[in-house]
Structure formats: structure tokens, C-alpha cells
Image (cartoon, rainbow, N blue to C red; front, side):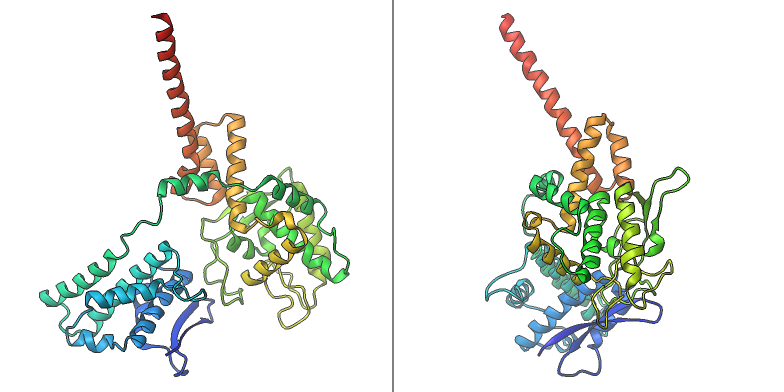
Length: 405
């Protein structure tokens, strides 16, 4: 059987997804739909719900391939045997688009196994009428525990990974190429029709570079998100939590994963935003100008002209830009977020900020909650530097004592 996940938008803007058997087109699969609606949807974002559905989809594929009827098995109090769990584990970890035998990353594999275990625990409790009897409950929990044991595998040193993140930054040649693009976005553009999209792409990258905001936050910016300078105050962008935005027509809605906040921008970026909004975006037929209309939109003629830029369209635009500017090949949105944090660290080091000030300002500008793990990750650098300095002083003191002997 072939299973597909389909996404819909309700009248109030909520996104929801359902799992279908492609051969039976009319209705979504009953148990996966009930599980997501009654259990996962209550406190998980739509993006997380889709990850749950992907895990459940793989469970259904494995069930069909191995000719197992999980509902019938559970109703007769028969649970998964170790060999079946191993087969399910392999199916959950198989790469879908690679060559035969290729696997997905360990972190994603563990997530799928954890979500699959949660679903199978729920399914057993749902279809077994005596699921509250002690021996039945113990059997269900034992199956879940056995599945979760398969996630207890290392996916690399967490300490080493955290150190790599804290030190991640743009290569210098890519940084210089980006700055040249920001200063002269139309270089190499010959057709007038290409200038609007080029300026939009350059401005979007400049926002990511200057503010460190996430891609979903960038694509969610509206005309009302941009405040021009005035009254002695500089220009800034407002980031808001926007899950289930009724004004957003995109099935895969970009969302702000972090807290809402205000981020300042440079005078040069402000001028480019005004130029894009007033001279290029405004020329698109049928475009909206209310504060709830999206700032970045599709320019090309066609049915999607004037619609908000999608994640896929932004990725495609970035790839096209890289073909013209080879030096920015390493650039991707999250690298610009890491690079912002690297540059922020350099600045606070130069100005001699203390640990608490650095952490609180970083959290505010990144949209992290106080005491965020990510904030502490970047700030850990100070602790390491202090340890190195003290260690060096102790070593030198030992050397002096030897010289006096």
C-alpha cells in the first residue's frame, strides 16, 4: 500500500494534516487521525504533528509490508516480538530518497522510534477493552519500553557538537560576497523583470544576516512588521508568534519558533526595505497594502503572483543566487543565525561585557527564554576562557617557583 500525508487549512487558519491510503482516496486512516486529533494536536505545533504522522506512516508501511494487522494483534493480546521490533526499527530508519540500504540520521531515527512507540502504546490502549487490567497494562508498557530501548544509541558527542555550534560562522570570502550583494543587489541583472526578485532576495538575506532571525520568522514578516525610523528612534522589525495565521494562505505555514520580539536594523537595510516595498512590491498587480499583507511576495506572472513567498520558493531563489555568486555557496539561513551569534560574541568581547549582560541581551535579540540552553551554549565561551586564563596563571606560578629553587 502507498500512504500519503495531506495538509489542509481550516476556516480559522489552523493547519492540520491527515494520513491517507492512496488507494482509498475518500477518508483518512481512522486510528492515526484519532490519535493526532485527540492526543498530539492539543499541545504540539503543526510541524511537530507532521513528524508524528511521518513516523506513523512508516509504521503503516511496515505493517503492510510484513502483513501484520496491529489492531487484530492487540485485540487478541498479542504484542510485538523482538524480531518484529527489529524490523520496525530498520523500516523507521530507512532513507526514502537514497539508494537501497541508506539510512536517515540517528537523531531523526530516534525521534521516529519514540513517536512510533507512543502511537503503538495509545493504539493498544484504544483497541483492547480490558487495557486497564494490571497484566494487560504491564504488557503494553513492556512493549513501549522495549521499543524505546532502541533509541538509546549515541548520535555523536553532545559536547563536541555544542562546541562546533558555538564556533560556527561564515567563511570570510562568503561574508565579503554577501556584503557586496547588499551594497549593489542589481549587479549582473540585465532584465528589468528580474530586478524586483533580486532586490527581494538580497533584502531577505540581509535581514537574516543583520538580525539572526529564523527563516520562518523572515517569511512571516508583514507590512505592519516594519517600522521606519522617526522621533529619534531607529527602524526595527517586529517578530510575532503566528501559529495558525488566518491571513496566511500557505499550506506549509512558516512560523516563529522563538518568542516575539523587536529587532533593530541598519539605516541601509531600512532604505532598501522602503525601496522594495514602495518601488517593486507595489507594482505587482492586485497586491495588498494592509498591515496584515505579507512583506515578501512572489513577483513572477502566474496564479501565485502576489502570494506570500513560500519556504520552497525562498530556497529556490537562494540556489539560483548561488549560481550567479559562487562565493556564497556555503550560505544557508541557519548558518546566518550562527554567524550572527559569532559576531555578537566578538562584539561583547571587545566591549568587555560581563556574563549576565551578554546572556540577557542575546536571549532578548534571539527570542530565547531566560536561561535558554542555546544562550548558555554560546556564553559558555566566557567560562572556558576564564578557565584557560586561571590554568595558565597556575602553570606560570609553578614555573616561577621552580626558577627560585
